[in-house]
Length: 295
Image (cartoon, rainbow, N blue to C red):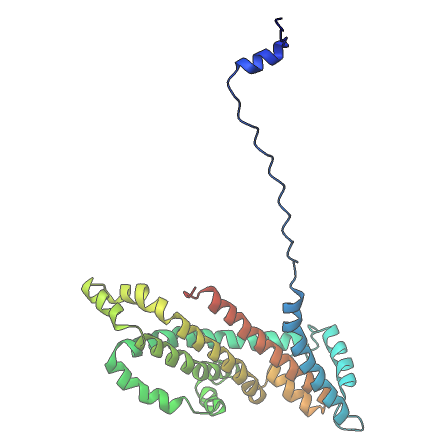
């Protein structure tokens, strides 16, 4: 007895065709990576909380010491005076009665001119002193002699030469802020590796090309350190110079408020002077990081 096996056409076609590979398994979807928060709360707290705690401690000690004082203002009274003062910082009621905003701007203008002149003279002079031994031996004793002189000792010389208070104050800023830039730039040039200079000598580079291609990148961190020190010195000097020369400026404003026995405004001015100096230094720190060649 013969038995027959019947197949459907589709089954016959599948049996006649070559073997097909098994379909690839669909990959399982990857688990989504945890999204990082836009703000690192821990880092922000570590950066903000300690300074705030220090300020709160200082204000608390100040409040305790002035609790029963009739001469020294309390933090609350000083705060109220500051609110009134900064409500209109740019008023004008005469040449000697202007808002604290105008006084700050006038002081910053003098600092910018004196500091800029010091940079134009001090940085090239530092390069020359560091590059040439003869100039180093000639000028270094003068720098060592003049650098420790008090800023206020230079003010009468400026008044004698310029016959006016404003250029005398700028002169005082210039002569006191030039030394950090001269010294730091010269030290940076002297610490350039000798191998760099030997390569420049082999390539027969000109002195200008050597300064631009080799010395400047190597000396830049030292130079910016000198600039930071100089701007702090300039801001420190202008307050003392304006106290003696008068006119419009934060130093003159402090002295004028002392003559009016307004201690609250003096404390506010001290805080303002510190904040402006801090902002100037932080701006130069940011500039130093921006132009640093270190990775």
